Length: 246
Image 1 (tube, rainbow, N blue to C red):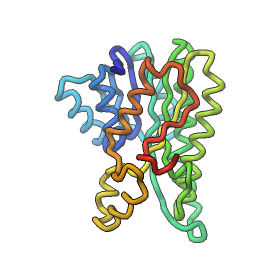
Image 2: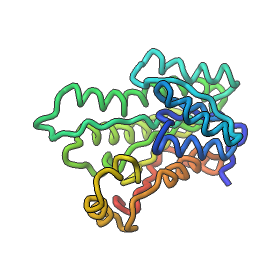
Image 3: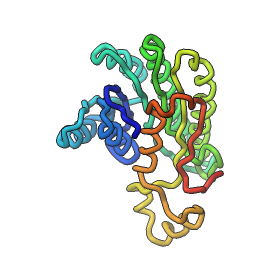
Image 4: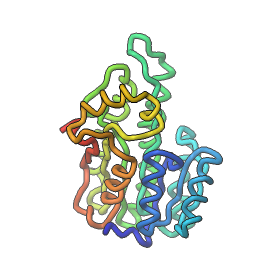
């Protein structure tokens, strides 16, 4: 199921959490994964994958370095002959009530979460349009759909990804390049594990399925959208949120 054999995939922020789970799932399904992350982090995930006999290579990358980022897709396509899948997963938070939010915190979140996806997708389009096929997947958030106090910058960036993806999907569908969004809800990460048992229990009450999601839940959705089985799906927002937002 969801065989990615022969596919070349780029995953940003691939060293931990959701990005790591996606990179791992892609590699397990046969893809050659270019795992992009900062410095040593990229090497760590690649060593973990290649140690299991999977195909992966490291790419040290800061997604806010526009000049470097816009060169990546073409470089991958030239090296491997194609670029089939791009997952724009890098994201940060700088939470604060809007009344107290600093402009630099707004700019940093938008640059990492939204502008980097624009730069990456624009560059990835070129090899994908030439080969008449590809998958662009942006990782948004349930917060971009329902909002959250103290996260106006984060919510704006994640909502922006949805509008961006729907518009781009219409632009390039005729070349068989699909553009979709995954919107995770509350996922078990280092951050959510650090909030304490009581806060953890309160979060679970907001979720009809009664539990936080796992990074692998998001990775499974990404694997589906990257596969041939999802060839007729584009401009879609796939919520992985346990029913938190319907």
